[in-house]
Image 1 (cartoon, helix red, strand yellow):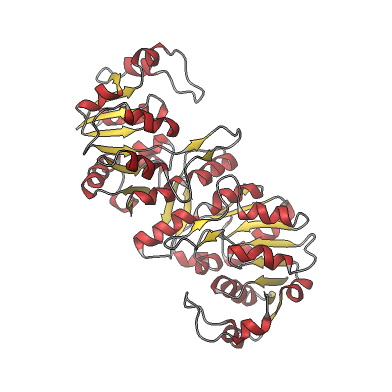
Image 2: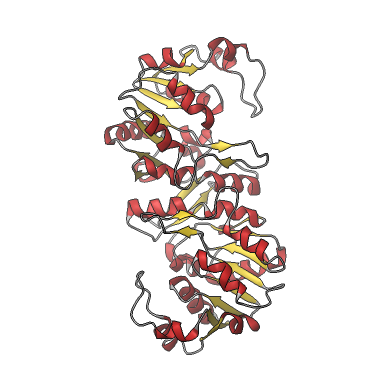
Length: 227
Length: 227
């Protein structure tokens, strides 16, 4: 498939790398190509700059959001939560495009552990779906460390990946990608329409506290049923 | 131990039953004993009235909150979320008492799936701790179906129970009770102080959506680490 990954950070790089490895035609989209390429040295999360990533991934090119989206049948939305809407607005015509939305509405402005800028009676997933009503949003993979998103078998035990979205065909496409990453059928839990993103986005407050308590981000939530 | 269970619903009954089975001296507290005993027939959740429960549990008596709390070293708070503060206010002197808080701040007023009346930058757990500063609140067990709270081995696989609280000795007492219920050390995850209840209370939105999607409440979240 032609896949555009929006976002040049650790999540975008992990997704782009793995999708290219799986022989998809991958491009990365960013707001300003020149700015993105001018960055040197790792970001505050230790992620190398996208320029270095591109040197090591000759099949992947960097474009503006609209150039990257043009031929893409799937957009992987891997920007910061508060940059998601702006990125999509810059992408041009999104009608009928499948958008695999990995974002979380994290608000770091208070210092300490982030809060959510959309929660409880709303979610970033449904806000984006409302803003781009003819695009097919599928919220998934947003509940875990990016290394596990694309390589779930590396955990060494089964866990759960949630899927939320209004369009059945779009969800089937995303589930196909999840399976290419290594997710088992029994690990994939379709929660229903995009409002169920209220559930999965609210895993972030507990994810952050498990991470703080254990100093280990290499975990995932599992819906344990004894089966 | 002398344990007072606050709340006559399904969670209170499950806890009282199991604690008595484990030979603790258990009383149940309620706002108005006469009112509670006058109820006939199951509630909207199918829970039998407390009068019937008491007939089948001759060692357990029903008292007002303050009578029940008087000799208790541990109070199990199993009321509805919006009744929690009032119940504790009616209980008299709570200084230095250990309160195992199982409540969730569920707001059913909107119809449909409940939202949370405390979330994101606060939690019911920390609001109660602030309202009764000399009591030792330990939030735990609030993230699962009550049958699993008191009999975790019935699930058939390991899962996770979270613990949040400011007082180490109170947490140790609660963890002792959890182990009596059958929780393994490896399943008990101490997240830190009472503000970490923001994490575990925000599991409710995803719990509710897993339940809606699967029509099965007999599951629990596991922090899967591959170990």
